[in-house]
Structures are given as C-alpha cells and as structure tokens.
Length: 322
Ligand code: ACO
Image (cartoon, rainbow, N blue to C red; front, side):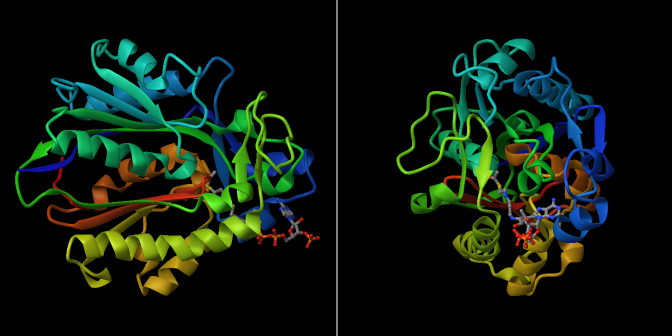
C-alpha cells in the first residue's frame, strides 16, 4: 500500500479585486501587473472571514465531491501564516467545525512552502503508523498582512483555502517522494513580523509582509527546478517522466524561467495566479483542485512550493483519479 491524496477541496472568498482597483490606490496599472506577474485579479476575504472559516468552506467543498472523505480522519495539519490565533491552532478550529473534535490538530508555518511541509509531515506520521488518515490544509488571509501603500507587495497576494485527505491507497499510486528544504540565511528577503517580534538586524514595519522581490524571484527560479528534480530523483524518475507540475503560484515569470531551466512545457503546469494571485500556503491545493480535470490515473505529478524562511517543499505523486 502507498499513501496518497483521495479527496480535494478549495474555497476562495466571493469578493473579486481586479488589478484596475489598484490604479486608484497606487502608482501602478493593470498592464504592468499582468506583464510583470501574470496576475489579473485576486480574492479578498470579507471582514468576518478568517483562515479557519475559509478552511471550513474548503472542507465543505471537498465533502461535496467525496461525502465520506472525513470518516476515520485522526490528524489535521493546517499550513498557515495567518492563523486566527496563536492557539488554539487553525487546524483545531477547523476540526471542531467539521465534526473532527477528537483528531490531533496543529498548524505549520513555512510561508508559501507550508502546504508541502504539512503534506510531508502528515505523510511521515501515516507512514510510521502513528496516524491513519489526515486532513491536510492550507488557508490564508494574506490581504490582512499587506502594506496597501507598497506597490511591489500589495498587488501580489490574495486570500483562499485548500484541503486534501491523505490516506492509504493501492500500489503503485500515492506519494513517491518528499523533499523539504531551507536556507535560513535568506530569511531577511521575505518576512512577516508580529507586533511583538524582534528579528535581529531587520527593520520592523509592523505586522506587514516585507520582501526583496528580486532576491525572492532569483531564489524561486533556482529552487523550483532543483527541488522538482530532487524529488523526482528520490522516486527514481527524471523530468521526462513528469506529466504535470503544480507549483506555488507567485509569479508567472518565475514559472516560465523555472520551466525553461527544466526543459518542461508550460502547457503541463497548473496556473491559477491570474485569478487568485499568490494565496501562500493555499495556492498549491487550490491549483490541484483546478487541475483535477487534467489529471489521469498513473500521471506523475509534482507539487512544488517556495517562500519565506527561506523554505521549499516538493512532493511527487503517482496520481489516481478520485
Ligand atoms: N507597478 C508599477 N511599477 C512597479 C510595481 C507596480 N505594481 N512594483 C514595482 N514597480 C517598479 C519598481 O519600483 C521599479 O521601479 P524603479 O526601476 O523606478 O526602481 C521597477 O518596477 C522594477 O522593479 P523590480 O523589482 O525590478 O520589478 P520586477 O520585475 O522584479 O517585479 C516583483 C517586481 C513583481 C515584486 C517581482 O520581483 C516578484 O514577483 N518577485 C517575487 C516575489 C514573490 O513571489 N514573493 C512571494 C514569495 S512566496 C511567500 O513565501 C510569501
């Protein structure tokens, strides 16, 4: 038996914010944003929405397609940088509302690489037999972390949530390999401090996302190909065996450069950033949900994430239709 994804769900808030809305707020325009990022619009959470409430909606969406998917879940892992509270965890708050109040539940903080980390940790716990079935999530209210006067960050992010169920599946399907990596010396390139945080040597702009866009760009273009090849290598596979790439959705130019390095066609890459922007830890499960119609039984799929930390994650799977 392997361990694989057997159910997928996603949620984005109702409110659509097109690029044109930034023209009244900042010195920018739709043409620049589309040309430099590929983003056309993003979703913005309503004031009453939180990472946990959006996570609950993602689980409800998953249950529409797979009504029995939560039966036997004994572990909930939620990747988020925008938890409702330091504790209880967002995972626990979601579990309580979806009828899983007795599951082990905790959050993971690895920014935009968070979903792969959550998947990797849950995979390890299932593989070792410590847990039997996991609900793995990414949920983010990134819009609340933005400096809306900073045109180089405000235009990039959006809100949303995604959820998958991970459990035993017949061979040869399921997870083929996991790669989690970090370069903590690059933490100054991308950070989000809380009110009370002190990070030596770093300016504290309040609880706002701060980044060196060019540094992050260069890091991402290097790490997407290397993490993808590493995780395929762990499965004894190469780029010629890859059927579909589901990357973190940050900037289409990052993905074009990475695919050029990999010699992999963009036609086999999931792209949702035009409509959702960068939803951080939610972007990979949301992109997976939107890719379901393109995936066939036996396809080799890689989910690859990168972000603050600096951190990266890659998970290779042999797909089985849900
Ligand atoms: N509209 C118009 N002009 C802009 C905008 C904007 N929205 N943003 C920046 N510019 C300007 C800059 O001020 C600069 O002007 P200058 O030459 O007069 O100084 C010019 O455009 C070029 O700036 P660059 O930073 O070189 O622009 P670049 O092409 O690199 O695009 C961007 C900037 C979009 C931020 C890009 O660097 C990027 O996407 N980087 C990766 C960021 C990222 O993905 N972060 C999230 C990672 S995941 C996570 O963990 C959260």
